[in-house]
Image (cartoon, rainbow, N blue to C red; front, side, top):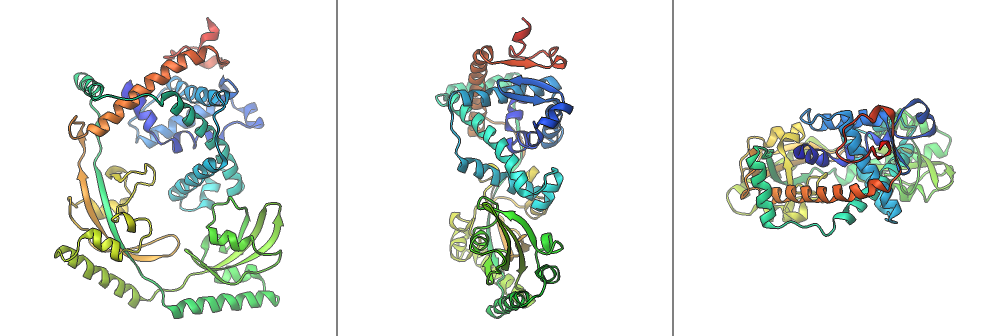
Length: 458
């Protein structure tokens, strides 16, 4: 049972406490959806239980199965923490909430391909509507996380406790299996457009701006010319944005500098070159449309960039320059240039990547590599339209294996610490349940909970 609890805890909060919770309580929904439990001022709906169960089974690839009662107890625990965070005057800043929301949007966008698809998938009116709901959910998540951290802040683990924890799992034949993990580093060379091509794009946008100011339709110009396919068919209309919107800084700065009906001068972002039309000022928001043009990159430039990287990798292979030196001197990826090219897992913040959960395209390029090997040079392109060539170094690789106390000491230590913190939370919960208003729905009073959630029936 402990292994299941740990697995539940390690399922990304972004998925378990967000995907289901996104569709939680509003006045109409309560009327058509049963209330499973009330904990303090927080409620869990019947539909929440189903959504969380489906999400956990999906994220664990069917390896974790939970009953309705187990899932409800997990959710009650989360609601109890969030409730007492408010009671204990735990504070959450708007900046913290915004940071969580932005990471959530990035996560969903990567899964669905665009923010428009995310909005459509979850049934919201627009991105701002989605962000408003995400803010509510993430604020509760932060309250819970901070309360949990406060309760366990003094919990520590000794080497002897780690050894006892490991031996206990070994005796019960419950040692965890750690998946194959890799550490990767990269060198990236961008294929840049020529100055002449950039000038051509700027001149074209300037001409479109002039024609619109003389009476032409901005909407029609966007449909015909814009390289932003996500909004081109909508005449370039991006809806209402505000200063907390997930648009890039340069875009927002230009949008908020315009008067109603004004068209901006051409300006550059990571996506290419834009002009913006400000339709209306709506309170703190701006309704805007834009036209995006991306400079073309010639086949000759692409070929030259690849040849430069081929020459560099040859020098690395001949030990004329180290990989790290080559990264520092030549790589053009701003996220990895200053850390030896090391690719960081965006969801964990760690340098290790789970080989079994890797993007299939990247997996295919590095799966056969052993520690110290270089991949073949390959072409890549970002959603912003940046074109580049890359080479990847396999810095380290561990294959799937049963936990070993020596080789996996840090991981085993983390699991032992998690268990000790869970035990501290359980002890805290035992006391707090007795002083917290809890009302179980009739369908769940038959559940055999581990904690005394059914105190009202005694």
